[in-house]
Image (cartoon, rainbow, N blue to C red; front, side, top):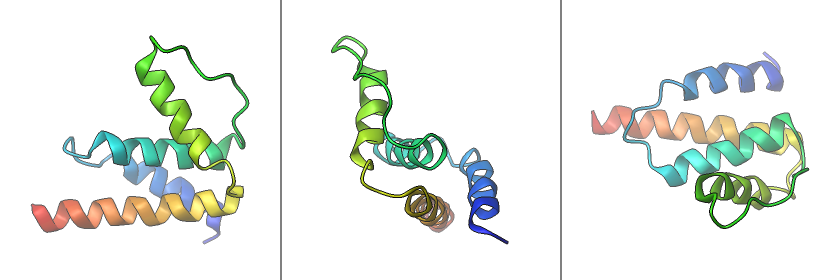
Amino acid sequence: MGLKEEFEEHAEKAKTLPESTTNENKLILYGLYKRATVGAVNTRRPGMFSLRERAKWDAWKAVEGKSNEEAMSDYITKVKQLHEQAAASA
């Protein structure tokens, strides 16, 4: 299985993460996903009254230096880690 296929598989697995997954971890996944699928940030930062959109934009901007492949690999690792944590606490 190639990196892209594994990434897509883990993107589906990410949808099954428990509700207790922290917002911080969700934002990390969001930033990595956007970097892997869209690339570098290509929009302006949302205004200060759009807190949710601004946090998502900041998470995407935080991983701007990574290549698409690095972002995919990091995303896969993070999804695996979060599923292992959820299984251990269940």
